[in-house]
Image (cartoon, rainbow, N blue to C red; front, side, top):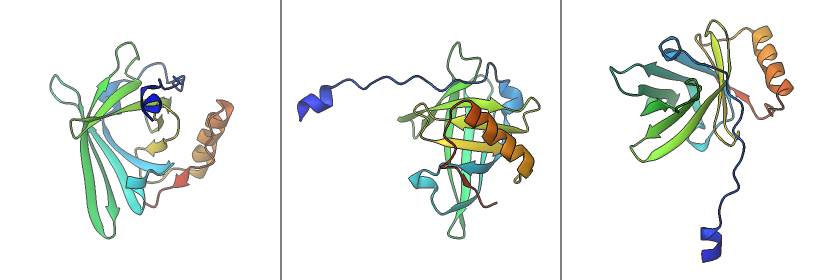
Length: 159
């Protein structure tokens, strides 16, 4: 059993991120259009994330949704990984949980974004408005498919 604990994890290549993210432009409200739902997101609707620049420190993040008729939220801080052009963030929840947040697709006008975790098992399609034109949605899915990213588990979020 201890040999399993001491075994090194296989390192996976990170999904390719966009070249650069302007953090100030990225800040604001993003609505979840679709995601590969995590356990903590099940039964959620009206899901959104709000990013706020703090004076000199990391970006403040507030994720929220409606679950069983009431609003639930979680806050975190996000710090860009050096050398990533701000496209790879380390997000800290509860001061102890650290997660990777990779911006893998981003509209030139910052109207939509696709974010992944390090392993590619989580995927979020976000937009500045609660609804995204179906043609744009299909175009984004095509971009993901062209990159070899499996979007078949994406579930549209009820807004």
